[in-house]
Image (cartoon, rainbow, N blue to C red; front, side, top):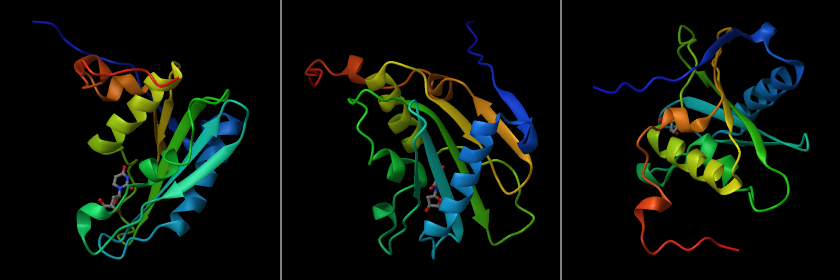
Length: 163
Ligand code: THU
């Protein structure tokens, strides 16, 4: 039997590097851009580019539920990974009506698939910081770890890299 395992690191918010503290603060602020009248879960995501720029997004729900988009994919949809800059890290967090909910949020399966495609497109790892209203942060250095045995362009014989 083979076993898959991967490294992750747990931090308290004040132990994070300064640049990441700021990224988490941006993700926290982005929760205010969320439209979440159905779930009441306001999720914010902030992307740190290799040139230091940060970009934010938030979940946008819809009365037709599957039309809604998660914060991670909302922000990623604004980025062109073909330019010289790459995505270094993504922080994701949330505010919830239930104030006892404090634990870090983890990207859903669809967002993991989307983040991993971005990682493959840019050819360098995207580090994820999973946060919540509480003080704990879980960091995974490489998005590949969150989606083992993933489906990707290798599975599509018709795939042609876009120049
Ligand atoms: N959601 C996100 O925006 N990101 C995640 O990582 C998990 C879930 C959103 C989707 C939906 O608007 C709400 O949270 C409840 O599922």
